[in-house]
Image (cartoon, rainbow, N blue to C red; front, side, top):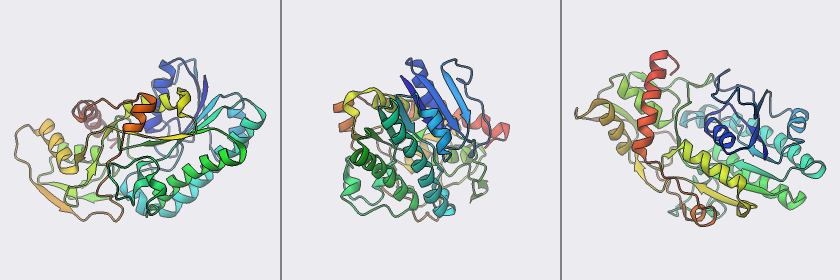
Length: 339
């Protein structure tokens, strides 16, 4: 299968493109390097990977890339950590809508005139920002109040793009909702706002690399946002890539949506304790609470039953296994000055 991946130089796409290539797919990638600047990927020289540096808002270019593809995986977006939601509240909404509208314009054209079969769009766990139903099931985003953040609201719009293109043009879709992706490959974004947490600049305002950085740099007591009781499901990026690929391939994924997540809940404090112990052993740990951000959701617990029942997908990599991969990578990037 030939697949167009937008945002192919990004964090999640780095795992995904590698997974797609290893399973025999041909991949066309597009990215404008707006987040990290030009970076190299391990698969750049793979003969089945074709990369174009360009902007997804260029609909003519998108039509050129999509015309002989079987499916599209729409990942490209302005995306960042919690500070992104506040610093770029308008840009996140406006830019991501432009990206998605151009992608869908090209996809509708290719579906009507070429042989495109389906669009796979990455939504987000943030569509459930206002839910009070746990574990949160697919479809709950339409039953609860809309997301409060512009990022969450735009991700909900991603789902409406998919549903609207099906309703009007019968363009098949799969909506994919990843939860708290953790892996290697994230660096400090070019336009990331500098936020201090105690005596350490936050790396990307993503909790795992930020906590690793603070512990590695010797921060003691350790600063955390709020009380540290926020519940998350930290999901290994390799598992998410596997789940996304299954969504692309599986015939029962058509015109449906899926939470992709580990089933295991972890508080920020529990995460910090794991990272501290892996870097500092039995050294006593104490905390200082920094003021929480407005859009720091306190509880995020997905239902993973649907993906398991329909797709046979389970995220099986434990948080400890994930940290054993991520901690050495992050600390090495710190030593190189990339974080």
